[in-house]
Image (tube, rainbow, N blue to C red; front, side, top):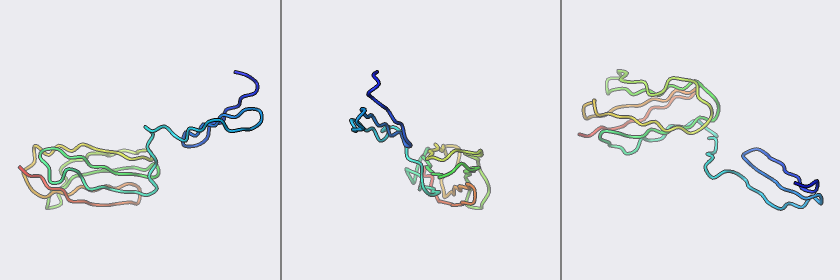
Length: 125
């Protein structure tokens, strides 16, 4: 290191390298493995759908919030709780295994803060 080189680190992983003249010599905006924080709450359709026996449910939360992700049968009975905790902002994926459930139509519901959304999924056997 010399007294003629300076480094600056910014938000989202930005790294700047300058010499004493203030000339920009390199920029790294972000790590390719780093995921962006969602700007809105979202609940994606599970995939695959229909499925047997497993599927993936993905959701995004823009701010830290208490999160509940539950699965219900056609009559609205709660079958299982997949998530029940406070989570930081980010995108999450949950594996759901329906091998002990009969074929049919089911619902999954995400509640995060004031956000609530329900989607359908189908188990085939």
